Image (cartoon, rainbow, N blue to C red):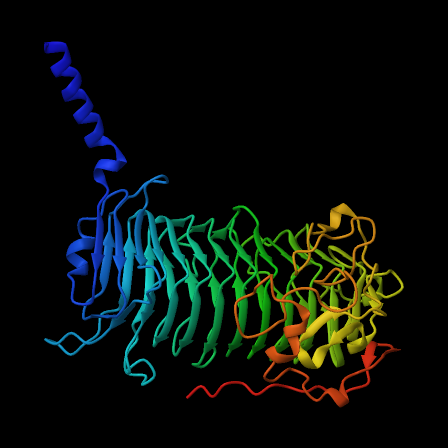
Length: 502
């Protein structure tokens, strides 16, 4: 009898220590005490928000709350609901908190299906609050969320963070901040294992704003299949890894920017991206002088219609492991690719070897610092290489020079799939972001929406409201070779109007 009682007590204790015993489900509506509930969060707790606007006058905080991989803390929208967390003024002080939602010193927390936004003051310039701050936390997820109408940064990763996920989340209408900002410029805060995938970042409306700012100290971070457009400055800035694992930027569509599409200052693998209509260069590299500028690999990208260079490559002289290969770099009547070189006094620049590994880049536009005779650049066919530049369709035309034109060497990091997710031909891959798979783009049509692999070519003509080269009658039909212009297109460049910052 005593043994049975002891066994019963032991079973109760074990259950009390199990995730199932911790779990609670809270179904809340506007007016509920969200902060009070957040203060009780434990592994397996689920907070379900019903429809409506939850007006906040103070930052909603999740502090030192730790779920587990098997029993995370979940804060989510109810099924078929679209709840909104909206920051308003404190009635006692008439001032605003610095953030709508803050997650700090926490682990395994998921936020799903929730809109996070400011109020009517967001565009006035009087306030500076942001959307979400993730501070010194690990394994925090923002999934299917919307972050919008904010004077400050949409999502801010501060302190040392690990394993943060931003998935299928829209960030838009930021007036004086970044879309996503991670770490610190002096590398005093490290961002490791951040994954930004299948997200939509657009309409950052203040002056010189950047969609994604990944500071020095960012490593093992991937940006995959995102859509970025209408940004007043840079699309993605990637800093030094500070000796950490290489970062990746793959399968993204980036356009209509005030400055560069990608600004790279650290070890990164850049593949299968489509970048067009930029006020600066499509891809720009520079050495931040931190003794870590190695292994910048730029391979199988399509870059078209830039005010600056399609690829502006600086800082490659002093470090090793850099690769530029199998890219379609097309700026008819403008700048194709620039490679800076350190030229000693009394030395002919033509005698200086090209730094890094550079091969099989199909270029139209001015070339400076690379050699066509060495196969570093090849004359492209201008806009005629693509299906329809006017409709943002950079899929290769059936007569395109890009088809089967790439160097398949494994040392050049060929991707297994292309921008559409179609398998690459290992022995004869195509140059640029697409692998030709029959006439007509079989995949997602570039448009102002999430990248959807199920959208087919027939929707393309309906998806483009205005384009980088919308005057179809002026589009280049051929590429000419007129050194130092490579693949000089016959048409003048057309540009889409940028949004009014006001």
